[in-house]
Amino acid sequence: MNSQAIMTKEAQYFMGAYNRFPVVFTRGEGVYLFSVEGERYLDLLAGISVNILGYSFSPLKEAIKQEVDRLLHTSNLYYNLPQVELAERLVHRSGFSRVFFVNSGAEANEVALKMARFYGKKKHHHRYGFISFSSSFHGRTLLTLGLTGQEKFHHYLDPFPPGISYARLNDIDSVESVLDETVCGIIVEPIQGEGGIYPCQVSFLQALRKICDERDILLVFDEVQCGMGRTGHLFAFQHFEVRPDIVTLAKGLGGGLPIGAVLVNEKIVEITERGEHGSTFGGNPVCARSACVVVDTVSKGEFLDRVKENGTFFREKLEEVHRRFPDQVKEVRGVGLMLGMEIPGKAKRVVEAMFQRKVLVNACNEDTIRFLPPLVIEKEEIEKGVEVLLEVLAH
Ligand SMILES: Cc1ncc(COP(=O)(O)O)c(C=O)c1O
Image (tube, rainbow, N blue to C red; front, side):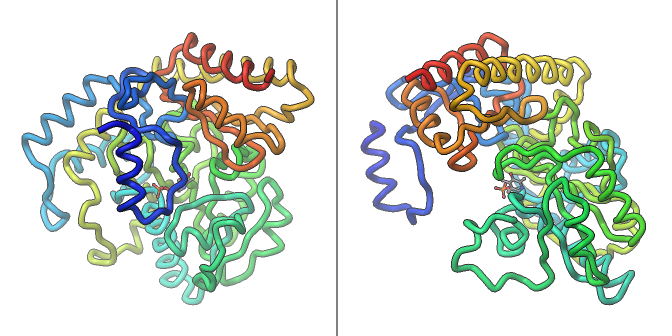
């Protein structure tokens, strides 16, 4: 079946919620994707920060194949080995106390927020409120959408669960102004992704940590997009050197398979009782085996050093683009291999034009394009992508 036939069938059977680019991919190799017609696309988006080891990482593929032959699923009524091995790795490498596995980023955040509410109610009796930030994105369930500080995601969905307030990123006074005795948790992306690649200032995260310590509020870092090596550290909190009470992970964790994780400290361990939460698929053996390979690979010093080095290289190239097109490009932002370029009013057009030239990037909104390449990307591939960006801006 050719692309056109597949797209026609999709239109016939899909609910129609997605905006998609007109291409059907059938195969990946390195940092490239190939369409049904065999056309090659340079991937600077990695399935939105998921395929962090690219498409040809054989230890990952082999581990998945072996686990598929051994055991597909058990449910969490029983133990399975890959899940426990993954838990051990994540706990040791993060310094957190325990982990809970889920299937996606939204679900990881739901668990984190549920834990914060358990803590607020069990320890302080009356606490149930959350603070999140403008331009944030935390998922597409009702609670995580409620906490997402972007109006465009709220249409027709209110009322959201009660107790949600929004503050401004990197503005601690705005946090103080919405703090009250009902707040049990503050959730923040250390680097906002969907909202436009906005990193938090270290001093801001430190100030949040201080407020949370003083009032015994739980601080949740949503590392669904910015975690798993993207900053040049396995966890984003290690880049900022501020430790939250809960970290949520998904996307890159499985290297392409759906798995999420919630890392918690002793405060949560103390108040959690067996039976209070569950998941049918969470920590499924195949996904967990895949995630073990990802964690082992990404946490190596040389791997993370290369992310830092290539992140700096990519950023310098984007700064050059900024210098060459100061009238179109307003700013380059980001950390490591999580980069954004603000091109006011033109982001969608630039992304479309790059797609026509077979380079995949994404527009967070009308103003910002974002680059989330596989972490194994090479300098030549970065150069190739930037050349195409230059060509598009010159047109
Ligand atoms: C920071 C952040 N949190 C949560 C999510 C939701 O993840 P998922 O789509 O896996 O539910 C996303 C997805 O883009 C995200 O970027």
